[in-house]
Amino acid sequence: MAMMNDGASLPDLTATDVRLVPFAPDHLDGAVRLSEQAGWPHRSDDWALTLSASRGVAALSGDMVVGTALCSTFGDVAALNMIIVDASMRGRGLGRQLMNAVIEMAGPREIRLTATQDGLPLYRKLGFVETGQIVQHQGIAQADGADRAVTTGSLGDVARLAEMDRAASGMAREPVLRRIAETGTVLRAEKGFAMLRPFGRGQVVGPVVAEDGDTARALIAQAARRAQGTFLRIDVPASHDLSPFLESLGLARAGGGTSMVCQARPEASTPFTTFALASQALG
Image (cartoon, rainbow, N blue to C red; front, top):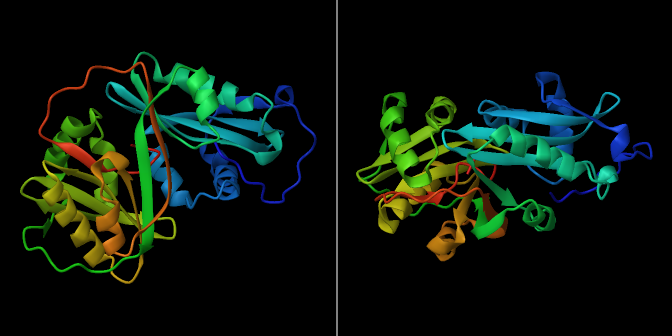
């Protein structure tokens, strides 16, 4: 929940001066302002993708959005995300109020999130435990040769790809994957798939789901070739040790976050693995 002050001044408020309301379309502009203040690259379209799978709350001071939190539900799993508190409101208990609201929305599901360093203490107090690290890589993409084993998919592939994604992640995300496929590019391989779409300053590749690391690297290399010469981002679990490979594609390490879970369910056995997230928000 790291906040960066953008210089905007607000009245001297307390958390009791703020009311929480269901997140609505007219809160979007204020939400984009908050994510910009936090140093996040999300455009309105990036918020809209997350909102398409989410309910949430906005914290209002008068008509000004001073906090947000979303709960994206995917079957038995919920992802909490876009948890932002205006810099002027930090340390006043608003973050806990926002978290309590979206935890209630998640209900009995397994609850996941990607935490910033500043958010870790609160999330731990709320019962979340660390499960690993997420590494963000970004930069001007460089081609690494074409792999003829990777082909371009289509909307007609989404149902099958959603099955692979659910096997890997435990999340039922077909509507989100379909929306990504409508605006981006689907890449197929015999043992996996990847998606490339507009995001922030350029494009992002994710999710990347595959049966093995060689397939994942082939899919990512193809995405870099498609994005050659333009800004590309990818968020990967550190446990896969993809950083040297990603750096060879021009994608330098640029931060990351901590994967956390609450109300964890047993993991099912599956041949598929998530090698790159759809986003830090959506997992």
